[in-house]
Image 1 (cartoon, one colour):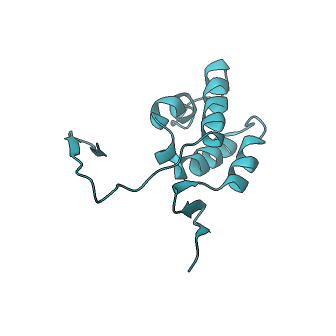
Image 2 (tube, one colour):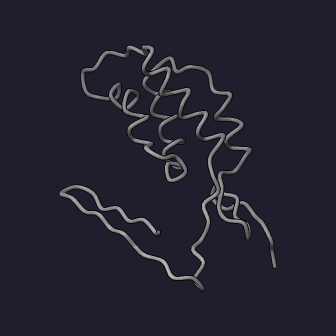
Length: 121
């Protein structure tokens, strides 16, 4: 019926799943945060698309460190770099493809005390 559409901020088509460009244009034009509320808002929106950004948590760490209890708001150079890096990666986010079920593939899993991860290869 429909060849392409936007569902929950994702553009879905026969080519795969990618980030909705209209959402990313808004995110790319955001000014530097002036408060913790701005940081929380940005990380919430960016976190929705974290599957498109390799090592999202590692990049966002300087920003998430600001959210700790009794931590003064000091938006330094590392925070600015993380802010710009996340915005850039959101704009250049890759397309996620569904697996080709006609070909064999392998599922690789990794677990620890606090997380589980899997990769199709």
